[in-house]
Length: 242
Image (cartoon, rainbow, N blue to C red; front, side):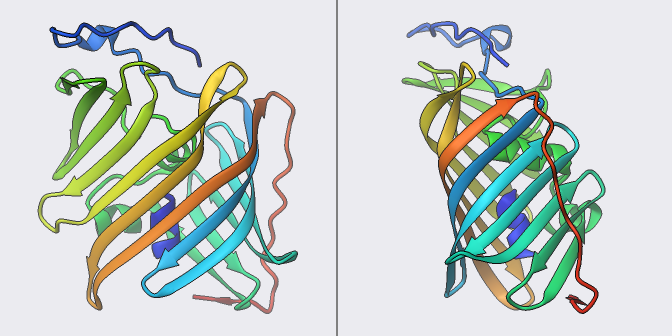
């Protein structure tokens, strides 16, 4: 879901049976739970033929706000503030800012984009809540959790060994827009496994043609806790809204 922005907890793992399909009640996916999260990451954004690499400081207050501060070769390049109402992106390089609302983004991709979805994408948690009609298949050492939201099919690939989500695929049946999120390099963070590497790839159609946007995160630091963090954010008066 982070690619959408740029383009426009402990549960015990239960060993799987090698011959039987795992019932829903025992598919105990391990997810990160927290009050505050903070991390530092190398971030690479590819949008068409353009590529930009930045250093990012990321802070999250659970179910409230996601804040990112970007620097390019030691110079502040911009900030992003994601809350339950909107997404605001400031570019210090271009001296402009963008404001996105979730209704607009949801209509564009025929999938409900909200704060909770974006927060889950950051942490490697499920993007959608579990439903009774969800389907579960066992693929060798991987569980496949199939979910649907309107015309969008969501495929969650979960390691049968760690019970962590390794990949998520979203496919929109009418437009064939798609997004893939892959997680890797899991390391312990407060007793849970956190993906220090994440890659988001978004393929979608616009009036200008087919666009391919991707974002790569490579964390060098990640931690959770209950210590209150600050989220400084203001838009300079001379910046233009785009």
